[in-house]
Length: 185
Image 1: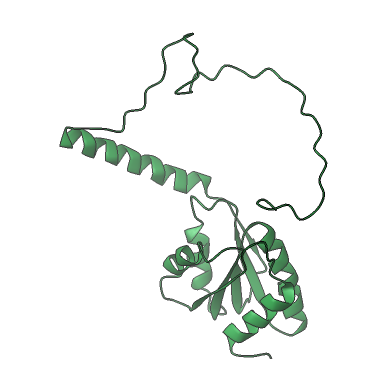
Image 2: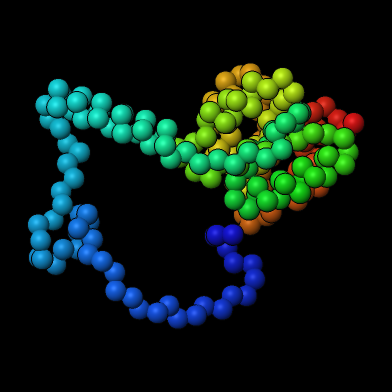
């Protein structure tokens, strides 16, 4: 987990290594070559619009080819969790507990948050078995709005989060899932 150390750690020296020249860098040339200049100021409206179209195509291509996502246990899932990082590992334990209680649960784990795995969430929202989504985060809900946009009102989307170094427990996630589904089975 990144952010706050909760256990002792031992740092070892990192061996020095020679890195290749960064010809793409905008600074750090030490006068060895011309610096790369990135221009984001286009005074001419047509030039600016052309640039914006170029960027739009570039970002669209990135979204098509660079989105990374893991789906877990979605077949027949009544509730779909959306979680990433450490929280996703905790959610998998909650999914196993819910299965013992007769509740089918699955998870969508964004590996990239940009581009966001919108299509995977849309596909899950189209499943007849899915009754609701529960976004679990170790934050104040920075991802839940993206999930709501992807679900597009097809199913309810709820949020459960912990902050300040507090880690959600599988038990708390199970309780929240049951609450979202309207009670225990």
